Amino acid sequence: MRRSVPVIREAGAEDLALLPALEAASDSLLAGMAGVRDSGPGADPLPPPGSAADLASALHLLVAGTPPVGFARLEEVDGQAHLEQLSVHPDTAGAGLGRALVSAALEWAKGQGYTSMTLCTFAGVPFNAPFYASCGFGTVAEPGGELQALREHEKEIGLDALGERVAMRIELVPSN
Image 1 (cartoon, one colour):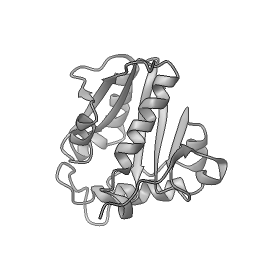
Image 2 (tube, one colour; image 1 turned 120 degrees about the horizontal axis):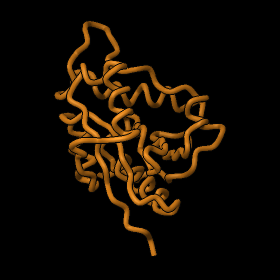
Image 3 (cartoon, one colour; image 1 turned 45 degrees about the horizontal axis):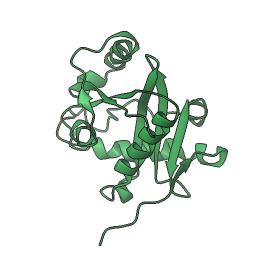
Image 4 (cartoon, one colour; image 1 turned 30 degrees about the vertical axis):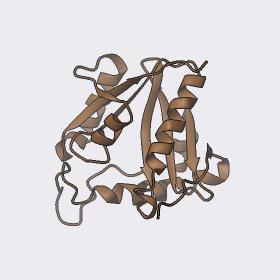
């Protein structure tokens, strides 16, 4: 039986303290996943989750459920919407929550007048690049500008050492 997707809403101040733990739980899904190399016994392969203060400074933050079981953090890169983080609690994975959050993020971006959305993700993880491709995102072969700078930053903090990373983009059709 398919679980229902919680209501997607704008994050409130009361949600911020809960989101770092939610991000850490979501990141645990990458441990041992094809497409992500181990970084050694007991090592956490990913940078630490964003703090409540980091999340409070986001351009826009959407959450699913009360209390939140998923969230999408949106920023602006090269004058366009950028999906900086998508996290879903492992207990709710596979129920369509990630897709619902992406859809809500795309609708928000359209409503703000953005004409595209970008993101950076692991190429070989099924719930990363292949998932985003199923949402309509395509790989950006040669990112430029701020998106390239973001990819360089990911390399500097060690994400590329964990697995192949790609930048992706979707063109947004304005809502009428």
